[in-house]
Every structure is written in C-alpha cells, then in structure tokens.
Image (tube, rainbow, N blue to C red):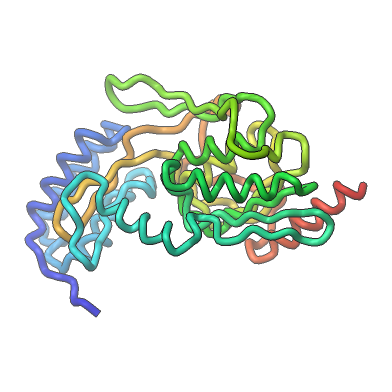
Length: 300
C-alpha cells in the first residue's frame, strides 16, 4: 500500500476556498465555510498527510449544512489537472468493470424482471447502449424492479433516459437551478427511445438503501413524485446538488455543488432528507418485498 504523501496544506486550502466562494450554489454558506477552513489552517489542524487532510477538510465542509456533495477527495495515484478529470477516470474504470452500469438483468418467476443499475448511472454517451439494451429486454416483462441499492449517483441525462423508458408521454422530470447568472435548466423525458419502452402502465418498483445517492435518488424521487413507481427499502443518503470537480493537488480533488434540484411536483427535493420509501424495510429484504408486491398486483 502506498503511503499518502505529506503536502503543504496552505495551497490546497487557499484553492479550495477560492473554488468554494466562486462556485458553491449557496454563497452565504460558502463564506461561512471559507472562514472555518482558514481558521483551521491557522490552528495547524491540517498539518497531516494528504489522505487525512481530505477527511478533515470534508468533515469541515459538510459541517454547516450537511451537503454530502461538498468534499475533498484523496486519490492514491496522481490525477490529471483538467477539471473533472479525476472523477471521470474513476468512473471509466467502474463502467468497464460493471457491464456499463447494468450488472444484472434477470427474469424472475411470475413475469417480474429485475434490472440492477450499479455502481452508478454513467454519462449518457457511455451508458445509453447498455441501459437501453437492458430496458428493452425487460420491456416484455409484466412488472419491473429497478435495483438502485448500490447506486452512488451519476449523470442527470442518464436519469432522464431511464425515466423515458418507464413513462408513456414526454414529462417534466426536474429543474436545475444554477448559481449566478445561469438560467434554470429543465429536464424532460425523451419523446422517443431506441428499442421498446416498458411504458407507464405496468407495475414498477424501485429498491433503495442508505447508500443510494445523488442521481440514483433523482431517478427514485422523479418517478415517486409522478406516482409512477413504488419505492421499497431504506431512506436514501440525501444529496440533491449537482457538482463539479477540480484538482487542487496531484492527489486531491475538491467537489463543489453548483446547482440545486427543484422537482416540478413537490417544489423541493431530497437534499438532507433522502428519498423516503413507500414501503420501508431493510435493504437486504427489499427485493423479496418488491417481488411479493408485484405478484400480488399482477394476480389480484
């Protein structure tokens, strides 16, 4: 195992403060956190190795409002300086090792299909093919279970793409409100999809756990608010703010939320609260519970 390097903390904190104050969707919180980071730096709290520094700074960044997208991430191997490059390298490795983010498609007894989407909803230009293939294959099932228990987030465009297969009509899914002069951006399901749709009428269940996060939460929340899906499992982690990543050291990347989600039905989002299941149960029991519900509805 590589020993984490000891690095001067001041340049990392200075750059983190700059990115935070220029980009964080909540400017008042950014100023509060900038003061905290400078104070902790002056106290010598950050005179540790790079991995420990990432943990300490992340805890401080999340101390004001619990925003779990706001963090400093440590990488054992050096990462490229290009904006977002560290995140993308890790995602590409996960994509290649998870069948494009769809590691399981299965038909259970009784005409109930299961699609597991994990470890994340990858960028749509990568994931459209595997997601579309899985959803087309499952479109013939009588009921569908989408397993997001191990999904840690990803691309809002991929969320819209999946939703498009599970609805009949073009539908307003979400609105992203950006900081500063950028206008709000609406997300809609697509008017057409490649392959066949599962559609908007047959029973649909989504499995969640306390690990389900970010874009996976959006997928769950969108379909729950539309009355399209029944959420089965545990409350999710509660991260609704889209973020960008910047390399602030060859081993460190800071991620800062640059917008917030506003659902057109609820007028709010799942930040801090998580998506609350319609059928609460331990995550390990969620698949069996959803299958039982699906069969009861199909045979009722």
